[in-house]
Length: 75
Image: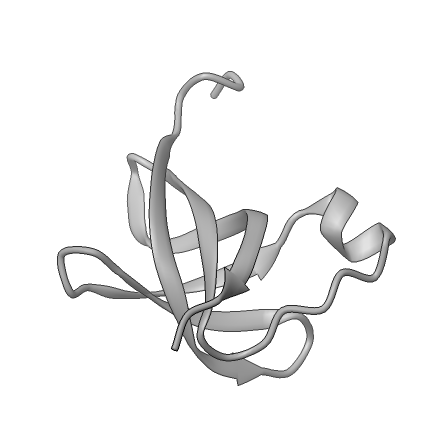
């Protein structure tokens, strides 16, 4: 799979789990499990509940994703 073969969605973190894993609720109501990408993990960017994030999802597995960007907290 090449770099361009992914689906990019926006969502909100609803649960912080261990090992840099998060439950993310996307706009259509689905909940998926997402991990932190390399740059966010390397630079120790903190992701908290209610943060808006961009998630890349493989078209072959729609239940797992990679968080590539973190926005501000939404209230």
